[in-house]
Amino acid sequence: METKDQNGLNKASRTLLLVGVLFVAINLRPALSSIGPLINMIRQDVGLSDTLLGLLTTLPLIAFGVVSTITPLFTKRFGIGNTLLGALILLTAGIIIRSVGGIFELYLGTTLLGIAIAFGNVLIPALIKRNFPHKAGFVTSLYSGIMSLGAAFAAGLSVPLAIELNLGWRGSLAVWGMLAVLALIIWIPNIKRINRTAPRRSFKEAIKKLSGSVLVWKLALYMGLQSFAFYVILAWLPAILIDRGFDAAYAGWMLSLSQATGIVGAIIIPLWAGSRKDQRLVIVSLIIVEAIALIGLMLPGIGMVELWVGLVGMVLGGTFGLALLLIVLRSKDAETAAELSGIVQSIGYFIAATGPFIVGVIYDLTSQWNYALILLIIVAIIKLVMGIDVGKDRKV
Image (tube, rainbow, N blue to C red; front, side, top):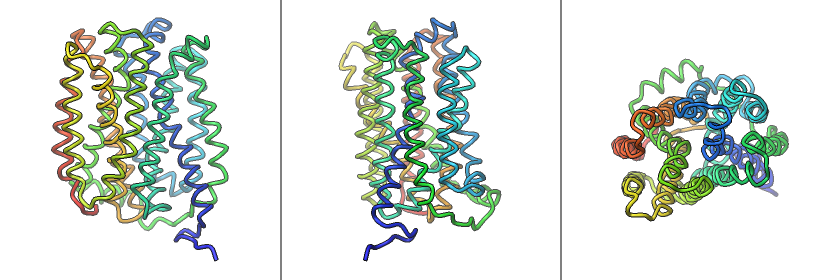
Protein backbone atom coordinates (compact mmCIF):
# COMPACT_ATOMS: atom_id res chain seq x y z
CA MET A 1 0.00 0.00 0.00
CA GLU A 2 1.30 3.45 -0.90
CA THR A 3 2.28 5.61 2.07
CA LYS A 4 0.74 9.05 2.44
CA ASP A 5 2.15 12.03 4.32
CA GLN A 6 0.41 13.95 7.12
CA ASN A 7 -1.41 16.03 4.47
CA GLY A 8 -2.86 12.89 2.83
CA LEU A 9 -0.62 13.13 -0.27
CA ASN A 10 1.11 10.18 -1.89
CA LYS A 11 4.56 10.42 -3.49
CA ALA A 12 3.22 11.23 -6.99
CA SER A 13 1.01 14.06 -5.65
CA ARG A 14 3.90 15.49 -3.61
CA THR A 15 6.13 15.41 -6.73
CA LEU A 16 3.48 17.20 -8.84
CA LEU A 17 3.02 19.79 -6.07
CA LEU A 18 6.80 20.35 -6.00
CA VAL A 19 6.82 20.84 -9.81
CA GLY A 20 4.01 23.39 -9.40
CA VAL A 21 5.95 25.23 -6.67
CA LEU A 22 9.06 25.33 -8.89
CA PHE A 23 7.08 26.77 -11.83
CA VAL A 24 5.75 29.50 -9.56
CA ALA A 25 9.31 30.08 -8.28
CA ILE A 26 10.86 30.52 -11.74
CA ASN A 27 8.42 33.41 -12.33
CA LEU A 28 9.36 35.37 -9.20
CA ARG A 29 12.44 37.13 -10.67
CA PRO A 30 12.42 37.52 -14.52
CA ALA A 31 10.02 40.50 -14.45
CA LEU A 32 12.53 42.27 -12.13
CA SER A 33 15.93 41.13 -13.46
CA SER A 34 14.99 41.86 -17.10
CA ILE A 35 14.85 45.64 -16.37
CA GLY A 36 18.51 46.34 -15.41
CA PRO A 37 20.15 45.54 -18.79
CA LEU A 38 17.46 47.57 -20.64
CA ILE A 39 17.77 50.70 -18.46
CA ASN A 40 19.74 52.66 -21.09
CA MET A 41 17.20 51.82 -23.84
CA ILE A 42 14.28 52.82 -21.59
CA ARG A 43 16.11 56.06 -20.62
CA GLN A 44 16.65 57.00 -24.30
CA ASP A 45 13.08 56.12 -25.26
CA VAL A 46 11.09 57.74 -22.43
CA GLY A 47 13.68 60.20 -21.05
CA LEU A 48 13.70 59.39 -17.34
CA SER A 49 16.47 60.39 -14.86
CA ASP A 50 18.55 57.77 -12.96
CA THR A 51 16.53 58.50 -9.80
CA LEU A 52 13.22 57.78 -11.60
CA LEU A 53 14.71 54.71 -13.31
CA GLY A 54 15.78 53.46 -9.86
CA LEU A 55 12.07 53.61 -8.97
CA LEU A 56 11.38 50.85 -11.53
CA THR A 57 13.26 48.47 -9.23
CA THR A 58 12.10 50.19 -6.03
CA LEU A 59 8.32 50.10 -6.76
CA PRO A 60 8.03 46.27 -6.71
CA LEU A 61 9.99 46.23 -3.44
CA ILE A 62 7.58 48.75 -1.86
CA ALA A 63 4.76 46.45 -3.07
CA PHE A 64 6.63 43.49 -1.46
CA GLY A 65 6.75 45.39 1.82
CA VAL A 66 3.06 46.35 1.85
CA VAL A 67 1.65 43.04 0.57
CA SER A 68 3.87 40.74 2.66
CA THR A 69 2.22 41.89 5.90
CA ILE A 70 -1.34 41.40 4.66
CA THR A 71 -0.78 38.09 2.80
CA PRO A 72 -2.05 35.98 5.78
CA LEU A 73 -5.41 37.82 5.47
CA PHE A 74 -5.76 36.45 1.93
CA THR A 75 -4.65 32.91 2.82
CA LYS A 76 -7.08 32.74 5.73
CA ARG A 77 -9.90 33.73 3.35
CA PHE A 78 -8.93 31.90 0.13
CA GLY A 79 -6.22 29.38 1.12
CA ILE A 80 -2.60 29.29 -0.09
CA GLY A 81 -3.42 27.57 -3.41
CA ASN A 82 -6.06 30.06 -4.58
CA THR A 83 -4.02 33.07 -3.39
CA LEU A 84 -1.07 31.87 -5.51
CA LEU A 85 -3.43 31.37 -8.47
CA GLY A 86 -4.61 34.99 -8.15
CA ALA A 87 -0.97 36.13 -7.89
CA LEU A 88 -0.04 34.38 -11.18
CA ILE A 89 -3.00 36.03 -12.98
CA LEU A 90 -1.95 39.45 -11.59
CA LEU A 91 1.69 38.81 -12.58
CA THR A 92 0.67 38.09 -16.19
CA ALA A 93 -1.49 41.24 -16.29
CA GLY A 94 1.32 43.40 -14.81
CA ILE A 95 3.88 42.17 -17.36
CA ILE A 96 1.50 42.90 -20.26
CA ILE A 97 0.46 46.38 -18.99
CA ARG A 98 4.11 47.37 -18.41
CA SER A 99 5.01 46.45 -21.99
CA VAL A 100 2.21 48.13 -23.98
CA GLY A 101 1.99 51.81 -23.04
CA GLY A 102 3.92 54.89 -21.99
CA ILE A 103 5.39 56.04 -18.66
CA PHE A 104 2.13 55.60 -16.68
CA GLU A 105 1.66 51.99 -17.87
CA LEU A 106 5.36 51.27 -17.22
CA TYR A 107 4.97 52.20 -13.54
CA LEU A 108 1.44 50.73 -13.12
CA GLY A 109 2.45 47.35 -14.61
CA THR A 110 5.61 47.33 -12.48
CA THR A 111 3.54 47.94 -9.32
CA LEU A 112 1.05 45.16 -10.19
CA LEU A 113 3.73 42.57 -10.90
CA GLY A 114 5.45 43.61 -7.64
CA ILE A 115 2.23 42.86 -5.72
CA ALA A 116 1.93 39.47 -7.46
CA ILE A 117 5.55 38.47 -6.74
CA ALA A 118 5.12 39.50 -3.07
CA PHE A 119 2.43 36.84 -2.60
CA GLY A 120 4.72 34.17 -4.05
CA ASN A 121 7.67 35.29 -1.90
CA VAL A 122 5.68 34.97 1.33
CA LEU A 123 3.63 31.87 0.61
CA ILE A 124 6.21 29.43 -0.71
CA PRO A 125 8.18 29.16 2.59
CA ALA A 126 4.84 28.44 4.35
CA LEU A 127 4.01 25.82 1.71
CA ILE A 128 7.42 24.19 2.21
CA LYS A 129 6.86 24.08 6.00
CA ARG A 130 3.41 22.53 5.51
CA ASN A 131 4.04 20.01 2.73
CA PHE A 132 7.79 19.28 2.89
CA PRO A 133 8.74 19.77 6.58
CA HIS A 134 11.37 16.99 6.68
CA LYS A 135 13.05 18.10 3.46
CA ALA A 136 13.04 21.87 4.18
CA GLY A 137 16.75 22.37 3.29
CA PHE A 138 16.50 20.38 0.05
CA VAL A 139 13.22 21.97 -1.16
CA THR A 140 14.40 25.49 -0.20
CA SER A 141 17.59 24.82 -2.23
CA LEU A 142 15.54 23.77 -5.27
CA TYR A 143 13.14 26.70 -4.90
CA SER A 144 15.77 29.42 -4.41
CA GLY A 145 17.97 27.83 -7.12
CA ILE A 146 15.10 27.89 -9.65
CA MET A 147 14.32 31.51 -8.71
CA SER A 148 17.94 32.46 -9.40
CA LEU A 149 17.83 30.51 -12.69
CA GLY A 150 14.82 32.58 -13.81
CA ALA A 151 16.65 35.79 -12.84
CA ALA A 152 19.82 34.74 -14.71
CA PHE A 153 18.01 33.84 -17.94
CA ALA A 154 16.02 37.07 -17.94
CA ALA A 155 19.11 39.23 -17.24
CA GLY A 156 21.16 37.54 -19.98
CA LEU A 157 18.44 37.42 -22.64
CA SER A 158 16.98 40.93 -22.20
CA VAL A 159 19.37 42.76 -24.55
CA PRO A 160 19.53 39.97 -27.22
CA LEU A 161 15.70 39.78 -27.26
CA ALA A 162 15.44 43.57 -27.62
CA ILE A 163 18.16 44.04 -30.26
CA GLU A 164 18.84 40.79 -32.12
CA LEU A 165 15.20 39.70 -32.31
CA ASN A 166 14.09 43.33 -32.89
CA LEU A 167 11.54 43.18 -30.07
CA GLY A 168 12.64 46.49 -28.54
CA TRP A 169 12.63 46.93 -24.76
CA ARG A 170 8.83 46.54 -24.59
CA GLY A 171 8.77 43.22 -26.47
CA SER A 172 11.76 41.98 -24.46
CA LEU A 173 9.88 42.65 -21.18
CA ALA A 174 6.62 41.17 -22.55
CA VAL A 175 8.20 37.76 -23.34
CA TRP A 176 8.16 36.78 -19.64
CA GLY A 177 4.35 36.91 -19.65
CA MET A 178 4.39 33.56 -21.53
CA LEU A 179 6.33 31.94 -18.66
CA ALA A 180 3.72 33.25 -16.19
CA VAL A 181 0.86 31.77 -18.27
CA LEU A 182 2.65 28.38 -18.34
CA ALA A 183 3.01 28.44 -14.53
CA LEU A 184 -0.68 29.33 -14.24
CA ILE A 185 -1.69 26.23 -16.26
CA ILE A 186 0.60 23.95 -14.22
CA TRP A 187 -0.51 25.44 -10.88
CA ILE A 188 -4.32 25.02 -11.27
CA PRO A 189 -4.40 21.19 -10.70
CA ASN A 190 -2.18 21.62 -7.60
CA ILE A 191 -4.68 23.78 -5.70
CA LYS A 192 -6.58 20.69 -4.51
CA ARG A 193 -3.33 19.16 -3.16
CA ILE A 194 -2.90 21.89 -0.54
CA ASN A 195 -4.97 21.22 2.55
CA ARG A 196 -7.02 24.09 4.01
CA THR A 197 -6.25 24.18 7.73
CA ALA A 198 -8.29 26.52 9.86
CA PRO A 199 -6.12 29.23 11.46
CA ARG A 200 -5.77 28.94 15.23
CA ARG A 201 -5.25 32.65 15.91
CA SER A 202 -6.29 35.94 14.38
CA PHE A 203 -4.04 37.94 12.05
CA LYS A 204 -3.90 40.84 14.55
CA GLU A 205 -2.91 38.51 17.41
CA ALA A 206 -0.16 36.88 15.31
CA ILE A 207 1.35 40.21 14.20
CA LYS A 208 1.28 41.55 17.77
CA LYS A 209 3.00 38.44 19.13
CA LEU A 210 5.66 38.22 16.40
CA SER A 211 6.49 41.94 16.26
CA GLY A 212 7.34 41.83 19.99
CA SER A 213 10.18 39.34 19.38
CA VAL A 214 13.77 40.66 19.03
CA LEU A 215 14.67 37.55 17.01
CA VAL A 216 11.94 38.38 14.44
CA TRP A 217 13.34 41.91 14.03
CA LYS A 218 16.91 40.63 13.61
CA LEU A 219 15.75 38.07 11.05
CA ALA A 220 13.84 40.85 9.22
CA LEU A 221 16.92 43.10 9.19
CA TYR A 222 19.10 40.23 7.96
CA MET A 223 16.63 39.50 5.16
CA GLY A 224 16.24 43.22 4.37
CA LEU A 225 19.95 44.00 4.15
CA GLN A 226 20.50 40.91 1.99
CA SER A 227 17.77 42.07 -0.39
CA PHE A 228 19.07 45.67 -0.26
CA ALA A 229 22.41 44.47 -1.69
CA PHE A 230 20.76 42.05 -4.16
CA TYR A 231 18.48 44.70 -5.70
CA VAL A 232 21.24 47.34 -5.87
CA ILE A 233 23.34 44.86 -7.90
CA LEU A 234 20.30 43.86 -9.98
CA ALA A 235 19.41 47.49 -10.81
CA TRP A 236 22.84 49.09 -11.20
CA LEU A 237 25.57 46.53 -11.99
CA PRO A 238 25.17 46.97 -15.79
CA ALA A 239 25.33 50.79 -15.40
CA ILE A 240 28.47 50.51 -13.20
CA LEU A 241 30.22 48.37 -15.84
CA ILE A 242 29.07 50.53 -18.80
CA ASP A 243 30.43 53.59 -16.94
CA ARG A 244 33.80 51.80 -16.77
CA GLY A 245 33.90 51.39 -20.56
CA PHE A 246 32.34 47.95 -21.10
CA ASP A 247 29.59 47.58 -23.71
CA ALA A 248 25.89 46.99 -22.87
CA ALA A 249 25.85 43.35 -23.99
CA TYR A 250 28.89 42.51 -21.77
CA ALA A 251 27.28 44.38 -18.84
CA GLY A 252 24.05 42.41 -19.36
CA TRP A 253 25.97 39.13 -19.39
CA MET A 254 27.85 40.10 -16.22
CA LEU A 255 24.47 40.67 -14.53
CA SER A 256 23.47 37.27 -15.89
CA LEU A 257 26.71 35.76 -14.48
CA SER A 258 25.91 37.21 -11.05
CA GLN A 259 22.46 35.59 -11.24
CA ALA A 260 23.91 32.29 -12.54
CA THR A 261 26.45 32.00 -9.70
CA GLY A 262 23.51 33.00 -7.48
CA ILE A 263 21.90 29.70 -8.55
CA VAL A 264 24.95 27.81 -7.24
CA GLY A 265 24.81 29.74 -3.96
CA ALA A 266 21.04 29.33 -3.67
CA ILE A 267 21.36 25.55 -4.05
CA ILE A 268 24.50 24.83 -2.00
CA ILE A 269 24.10 27.26 0.93
CA PRO A 270 20.62 26.13 2.16
CA LEU A 271 21.76 22.48 1.86
CA TRP A 272 24.89 23.24 3.92
CA ALA A 273 22.93 25.35 6.43
CA GLY A 274 20.06 22.84 6.59
CA SER A 275 22.46 20.05 7.56
CA ARG A 276 23.58 22.01 10.66
CA LYS A 277 21.70 22.86 13.86
CA ASP A 278 23.54 26.20 14.11
CA GLN A 279 23.94 28.43 11.02
CA ARG A 280 26.44 31.02 12.37
CA LEU A 281 29.51 29.60 10.58
CA VAL A 282 27.63 29.74 7.26
CA ILE A 283 26.62 33.38 7.88
CA VAL A 284 30.15 34.55 8.80
CA SER A 285 31.74 32.74 5.80
CA LEU A 286 29.32 34.40 3.35
CA ILE A 287 29.98 37.93 4.69
CA ILE A 288 33.79 37.53 4.39
CA VAL A 289 33.50 36.45 0.73
CA GLU A 290 31.02 39.27 -0.02
CA ALA A 291 33.33 41.96 1.44
CA ILE A 292 36.36 40.68 -0.55
CA ALA A 293 34.34 40.68 -3.82
CA LEU A 294 32.98 44.22 -3.26
CA ILE A 295 36.49 45.55 -2.58
CA GLY A 296 37.62 43.82 -5.81
CA LEU A 297 34.86 45.62 -7.76
CA MET A 298 35.92 48.97 -6.25
CA LEU A 299 39.42 48.62 -7.69
CA PRO A 300 39.10 48.48 -11.52
CA GLY A 301 42.91 48.29 -11.82
CA ILE A 302 42.90 44.71 -10.46
CA GLY A 303 40.69 43.51 -13.34
CA MET A 304 39.11 40.05 -12.79
CA VAL A 305 35.62 41.58 -13.11
CA GLU A 306 34.10 38.14 -13.83
CA LEU A 307 35.52 36.72 -10.56
CA TRP A 308 34.23 39.55 -8.35
CA VAL A 309 30.81 39.61 -10.05
CA GLY A 310 30.58 35.81 -9.78
CA LEU A 311 31.44 35.84 -6.06
CA VAL A 312 28.99 38.66 -5.26
CA GLY A 313 26.26 36.77 -7.14
CA MET A 314 27.02 33.48 -5.37
CA VAL A 315 26.95 35.09 -1.91
CA LEU A 316 23.73 37.07 -2.53
CA GLY A 317 21.98 34.01 -4.02
CA GLY A 318 23.18 31.90 -1.08
CA THR A 319 22.19 34.49 1.54
CA PHE A 320 18.71 34.76 0.04
CA GLY A 321 18.24 30.97 0.16
CA LEU A 322 19.60 30.99 3.72
CA ALA A 323 17.20 33.77 4.82
CA LEU A 324 14.24 31.76 3.46
CA LEU A 325 15.50 28.60 5.19
CA LEU A 326 15.90 30.48 8.49
CA ILE A 327 12.20 31.48 8.29
CA VAL A 328 11.30 27.77 7.94
CA LEU A 329 13.78 26.58 10.63
CA ARG A 330 12.77 29.21 13.20
CA SER A 331 9.00 28.41 12.83
CA LYS A 332 7.32 25.64 14.78
CA ASP A 333 4.50 25.04 12.23
CA ALA A 334 3.17 26.11 8.80
CA GLU A 335 0.88 28.80 10.21
CA THR A 336 3.77 30.43 12.12
CA ALA A 337 5.92 30.09 8.98
CA ALA A 338 3.34 32.02 6.89
CA GLU A 339 3.04 34.74 9.53
CA LEU A 340 6.79 34.95 10.16
CA SER A 341 7.46 34.93 6.40
CA GLY A 342 4.98 37.80 6.01
CA ILE A 343 6.36 40.03 8.75
CA VAL A 344 10.06 39.32 8.01
CA GLN A 345 9.67 39.88 4.27
CA SER A 346 7.52 42.97 4.81
CA ILE A 347 10.10 44.74 7.00
CA GLY A 348 12.90 43.29 4.87
CA TYR A 349 11.58 44.56 1.55
CA PHE A 350 10.83 48.03 2.90
CA ILE A 351 14.55 48.19 3.75
CA ALA A 352 15.48 46.70 0.35
CA ALA A 353 13.22 49.17 -1.50
CA THR A 354 15.47 52.05 -0.46
CA GLY A 355 18.56 50.44 -2.06
CA PRO A 356 18.23 51.08 -5.83
CA PHE A 357 16.72 54.52 -5.15
CA ILE A 358 19.49 55.61 -2.71
CA VAL A 359 22.18 54.40 -5.12
CA GLY A 360 20.51 56.28 -8.02
CA VAL A 361 20.51 59.45 -5.91
CA ILE A 362 24.16 58.92 -4.80
CA TYR A 363 25.26 58.56 -8.43
CA ASP A 364 23.19 61.57 -9.57
CA LEU A 365 24.93 63.65 -6.85
CA THR A 366 28.52 62.34 -7.13
CA SER A 367 28.90 60.70 -10.60
CA GLN A 368 30.99 58.04 -8.74
CA TRP A 369 29.93 54.39 -8.39
CA ASN A 370 32.47 53.57 -5.65
CA TYR A 371 30.34 55.35 -3.02
CA ALA A 372 27.58 52.83 -3.77
CA LEU A 373 30.03 49.92 -3.33
CA ILE A 374 31.26 51.39 0.01
CA LEU A 375 27.59 51.51 1.10
CA LEU A 376 27.24 47.78 0.27
CA ILE A 377 30.31 46.95 2.42
CA ILE A 378 28.76 48.84 5.39
CA VAL A 379 25.49 46.92 4.78
CA ALA A 380 27.44 43.61 4.85
CA ILE A 381 28.96 44.47 8.25
CA ILE A 382 25.51 45.26 9.76
CA LYS A 383 24.20 42.01 8.21
CA LEU A 384 26.97 40.11 10.02
CA VAL A 385 25.97 41.61 13.39
CA MET A 386 22.30 40.60 12.85
CA GLY A 387 23.18 37.17 11.45
CA ILE A 388 25.27 36.09 14.45
CA ASP A 389 22.13 36.02 16.63
CA VAL A 390 19.73 34.73 13.97
CA GLY A 391 22.03 31.74 13.26
CA LYS A 392 21.53 30.20 16.73
CA ASP A 393 19.31 27.10 16.96
CA ARG A 394 15.97 28.19 18.48
CA LYS A 395 12.32 28.80 17.57
CA VAL A 396 10.43 32.10 17.41
